[in-house]
Length: 147
Image (cartoon, rainbow, N blue to C red; front, side, top):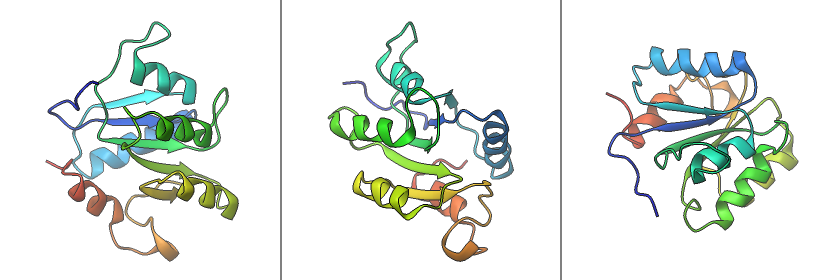
């Protein structure tokens, strides 16, 4: 079982290029200078995590940011696989999605997500009722990812 790398890393599982750029911008804005690995769907994320499909295995990420609606393997399918695998079951997974469907939220909660972020992604304002509490900064402080 691979150990987490000494340096914190983030795995972003997202198929929309604009959303990827938005996450990169928000991380920079919050002075989060950690490696960001990007997978375009759940299958690609599994390949990166396991070193399959011709991909080089990445260090175990400290945080996974997971979109729900993707081709090939969606976020909930990937999350179910991760939770069933002893190597990955304890990963901190944050759902990022445009869906505010209660069914998606309940499925994600049943699969023990660490958090649920509705896009458009603005880490300054995510949280219950669009609060202005800088939730992403708090999230990063808790995970000790900030410089």
